[in-house]
Length: 279
Ligand SMILES: Nc1ncnc2c1ncn2[C@@H]1O[C@H](COP(=O)(O)OP(=O)(O)OP(=O)(O)O)[C@@H](O)[C@H]1O
Image (tube, rainbow, N blue to C red; front, side):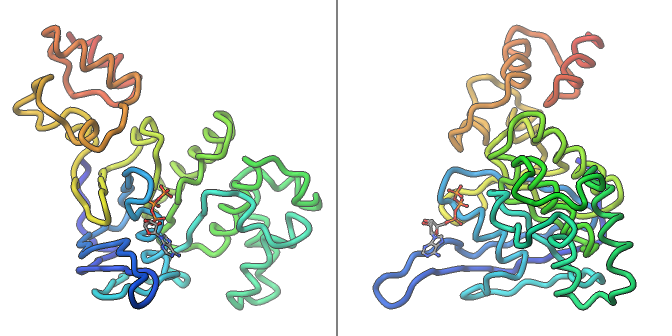
C-alpha cells in the first residue's frame, strides 16, 4: 500500500437512518474512516450495504443522523460526485451549455467560464463536441461530460458511485483513463464499484456489509487474505463478502496453491506476468 500522510476526509462515527418513526432503516452504522489526500480508495460491498449512502455523506448530499465528517480540502467545492447513471447529471441542451451550468452555479466569473469549460472538455476528449446536443452523446461520452463538469470545478476529492457500471468496456476504459490521470495529479479518489478488476488501480480497499466497514486494507490482503499465512483454504475478505475475484486473481490463486511463490501477490494481468516471470 502507498503511504499517505495528509488527512483529507475524516468520518467519525457516522450513522445514517432513513425514514421516520416506526418506518426507519439504518443505512450506515457508526462508520469511522480516514481518507488521505491523494489516496484512491475503492469501496466494495453487496447491494444495499450502504455504499451510495456513504458516497452521498462524503459529497455532502446527506447529513448524517449522528457523527460528524471533517473535510480538510482547501478547494471549493471540496468534493464532487459522479453518479452511476450518466443521464442523471446532464441538465442542458448542448455539451457546452451543460458544462457551463455547474460553473455558473458556483459563481465562477463569466470571463473565466469559457477557459475552464474548454479545458475540462479537452481533458476528457470532448472539446470537438462543444456544440453538439447532449442527447447525441453515447452513455460513455455522457459520463465523460459529467466528469468534465466536475473537473471544471477543480475539487480536491472525486467520488465515483459505480460510474462505469452502465458503460461498455471501451467507455469504461476511457473513464478509468481520465480518473487515473486525476489520481496522478494528486486528486483524492473514492471509487465505488462491484467490478473487482477496477481495484487494480486503487491504493486501499474498504469492504462494507450491512452499513458497517468490515475490511480496510490493501487490495492484496482483500483478494488473498493475510499474506504471511497465505492458505487457499483460509477465507479471504473478497470471498467472505460474496464476490468472485477477477480472472487474474483466480489464476494466481491456483498457481499459489500449486506451490508457485508469486510475489508480489498479483492483482492485474501485468503484475501476474511479472510475478510469473520472476519465478
Ligand atoms: N432514500 C431512502 N429511503 C429509505 N431507505 C433508503 C433510501 N436510500 C437507501 N435506502 C436503504 O438504505 C440501505 C443502503 O442503501 P444504499 O443505496 O446506500 O446501498 P448500496 O450499497 O449503494 O446499494 P446498491 O449497490 O444497490 O446501489 C438499503 O437498504 C436501501 O434500501
